[in-house]
Image 1 (cartoon, helix red, strand yellow):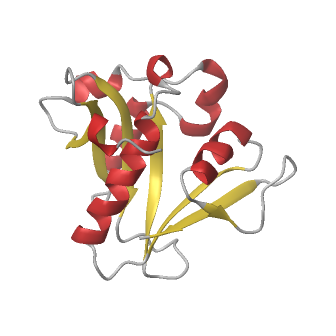
Image 2 (image 1 turned 180 degrees about the vertical axis):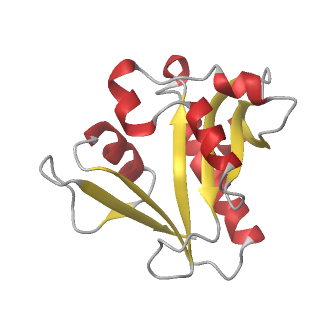
Image 3 (image 1 turned 45 degrees about the horizontal axis):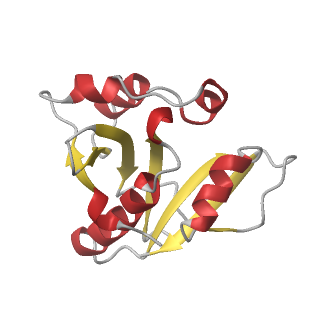
Length: 158
Protein backbone atom coordinates (compact mmCIF):
# COMPACT_ATOMS: atom_id res chain seq x y z
CA UNK A 1 0.00 0.00 0.00
CA UNK A 2 1.32 3.43 -0.95
CA UNK A 3 1.41 6.05 1.80
CA UNK A 4 1.72 9.30 -0.21
CA UNK A 5 1.40 11.51 2.86
CA UNK A 6 4.84 10.55 4.25
CA UNK A 7 6.95 12.61 1.84
CA UNK A 8 6.77 15.84 -0.12
CA UNK A 9 8.63 16.77 -3.31
CA UNK A 10 10.63 19.99 -2.95
CA UNK A 11 12.52 21.81 -5.72
CA UNK A 12 16.30 21.65 -5.41
CA UNK A 13 17.52 25.21 -4.91
CA UNK A 14 20.58 27.19 -3.99
CA UNK A 15 19.38 27.01 -0.37
CA UNK A 16 19.05 23.21 -0.11
CA UNK A 17 21.36 21.63 -2.69
CA UNK A 18 24.01 20.78 -0.07
CA UNK A 19 21.48 18.60 1.73
CA UNK A 20 20.78 16.86 -1.57
CA UNK A 21 24.49 16.27 -2.23
CA UNK A 22 24.72 14.41 1.11
CA UNK A 23 22.28 11.75 -0.15
CA UNK A 24 23.83 8.50 -1.32
CA UNK A 25 22.92 4.97 -2.27
CA UNK A 26 24.62 1.76 -1.17
CA UNK A 27 27.99 1.09 -2.88
CA UNK A 28 26.49 -1.72 -4.99
CA UNK A 29 23.87 0.71 -6.35
CA UNK A 30 26.23 3.54 -7.36
CA UNK A 31 26.80 2.18 -10.88
CA UNK A 32 23.08 2.48 -11.59
CA UNK A 33 22.39 6.04 -10.45
CA UNK A 34 25.61 7.98 -9.84
CA UNK A 35 25.87 10.72 -7.26
CA UNK A 36 23.51 13.59 -6.64
CA UNK A 37 26.41 16.01 -7.23
CA UNK A 38 26.79 14.55 -10.74
CA UNK A 39 23.03 14.91 -11.30
CA UNK A 40 23.07 18.55 -10.21
CA UNK A 41 25.99 19.25 -12.55
CA UNK A 42 24.16 17.50 -15.41
CA UNK A 43 21.03 19.56 -14.76
CA UNK A 44 23.11 22.74 -14.86
CA UNK A 45 23.87 22.03 -18.53
CA UNK A 46 20.38 20.73 -19.38
CA UNK A 47 17.94 23.53 -18.57
CA UNK A 48 14.88 21.33 -19.17
CA UNK A 49 15.81 19.03 -16.27
CA UNK A 50 13.75 19.48 -13.13
CA UNK A 51 15.27 18.37 -9.84
CA UNK A 52 13.32 17.63 -6.68
CA UNK A 53 14.29 16.43 -3.24
CA UNK A 54 12.17 13.79 -1.53
CA UNK A 55 11.59 15.13 1.98
CA UNK A 56 10.05 13.23 4.88
CA UNK A 57 7.10 15.24 6.17
CA UNK A 58 7.40 14.27 9.84
CA UNK A 59 10.80 15.95 10.37
CA UNK A 60 11.86 17.58 7.06
CA UNK A 61 14.72 15.10 6.56
CA UNK A 62 15.89 14.78 2.96
CA UNK A 63 15.51 11.07 2.11
CA UNK A 64 15.86 11.03 -1.68
CA UNK A 65 16.21 12.80 -5.00
CA UNK A 66 14.68 12.70 -8.45
CA UNK A 67 15.25 14.46 -11.73
CA UNK A 68 13.10 14.41 -14.85
CA UNK A 69 12.95 15.95 -18.30
CA UNK A 70 9.43 16.95 -19.37
CA UNK A 71 10.58 17.62 -22.94
CA UNK A 72 13.02 14.80 -23.62
CA UNK A 73 13.55 14.08 -27.31
CA UNK A 74 14.56 10.53 -26.32
CA UNK A 75 11.05 9.39 -25.36
CA UNK A 76 8.86 7.21 -27.55
CA UNK A 77 6.02 8.11 -27.95
CA UNK A 78 6.87 11.80 -27.96
CA UNK A 79 4.20 12.60 -25.36
CA UNK A 80 6.24 11.22 -22.49
CA UNK A 81 8.37 12.53 -19.66
CA UNK A 82 11.71 10.89 -18.96
CA UNK A 83 12.75 10.12 -15.40
CA UNK A 84 16.48 10.79 -15.54
CA UNK A 85 17.48 10.06 -11.93
CA UNK A 86 15.74 8.56 -8.95
CA UNK A 87 17.20 7.51 -5.63
CA UNK A 88 16.39 7.02 -2.00
CA UNK A 89 19.31 7.36 0.40
CA UNK A 90 20.56 3.95 1.58
CA UNK A 91 19.62 4.82 5.19
CA UNK A 92 15.96 5.23 4.22
CA UNK A 93 15.37 2.49 1.65
CA UNK A 94 12.62 -0.06 2.27
CA UNK A 95 10.37 2.32 4.21
CA UNK A 96 7.95 3.30 1.44
CA UNK A 97 9.50 6.70 0.66
CA UNK A 98 10.39 5.77 -2.92
CA UNK A 99 6.95 4.46 -3.82
CA UNK A 100 5.29 7.44 -2.15
CA UNK A 101 7.55 9.82 -4.10
CA UNK A 102 6.77 8.13 -7.43
CA UNK A 103 3.05 8.24 -6.64
CA UNK A 104 3.29 11.96 -5.87
CA UNK A 105 5.45 12.62 -8.94
CA UNK A 106 2.98 10.85 -11.21
CA UNK A 107 0.11 12.98 -9.89
CA UNK A 108 2.18 16.16 -10.11
CA UNK A 109 3.11 15.43 -13.72
CA UNK A 110 -0.52 14.72 -14.66
CA UNK A 111 -1.43 18.19 -13.37
CA UNK A 112 1.60 20.09 -14.66
CA UNK A 113 1.84 18.41 -18.10
CA UNK A 114 -1.67 17.32 -19.11
CA UNK A 115 -0.56 16.69 -22.72
CA UNK A 116 2.02 14.11 -21.61
CA UNK A 117 0.79 10.52 -21.32
CA UNK A 118 3.69 8.52 -19.88
CA UNK A 119 6.61 8.61 -17.51
CA UNK A 120 9.54 6.64 -18.91
CA UNK A 121 12.90 5.52 -17.55
CA UNK A 122 15.95 3.59 -18.65
CA UNK A 123 18.15 1.56 -16.33
CA UNK A 124 20.80 -1.08 -16.83
CA UNK A 125 19.38 -4.50 -17.58
CA UNK A 126 21.19 -6.13 -14.67
CA UNK A 127 19.78 -3.64 -12.12
CA UNK A 128 17.41 -6.30 -10.78
CA UNK A 129 16.75 -4.56 -7.46
CA UNK A 130 15.82 -1.32 -9.23
CA UNK A 131 13.71 -3.06 -11.87
CA UNK A 132 11.80 -4.96 -9.18
CA UNK A 133 11.17 -1.70 -7.30
CA UNK A 134 9.90 0.04 -10.44
CA UNK A 135 7.67 -2.91 -11.37
CA UNK A 136 6.14 -2.93 -7.88
CA UNK A 137 5.54 0.80 -8.35
CA UNK A 138 3.54 0.18 -11.54
CA UNK A 139 6.16 0.47 -14.30
CA UNK A 140 6.00 -1.97 -17.20
CA UNK A 141 9.19 -3.12 -18.92
CA UNK A 142 8.85 -4.11 -22.55
CA UNK A 143 10.51 -6.32 -23.50
CA UNK A 144 11.03 -7.85 -20.07
CA UNK A 145 14.62 -7.16 -18.95
CA UNK A 146 17.12 -9.85 -18.06
CA UNK A 147 20.70 -9.93 -16.83
CA UNK A 148 21.95 -10.04 -20.44
CA UNK A 149 19.99 -6.93 -21.48
CA UNK A 150 22.15 -3.85 -21.79
CA UNK A 151 19.28 -1.55 -20.93
CA UNK A 152 15.79 -1.95 -19.52
CA UNK A 153 13.10 0.50 -20.67
CA UNK A 154 10.23 1.10 -18.26
CA UNK A 155 7.05 3.13 -18.60
CA UNK A 156 4.00 4.01 -16.57
CA UNK A 157 0.87 5.82 -17.71
CA UNK A 158 0.16 9.22 -16.21
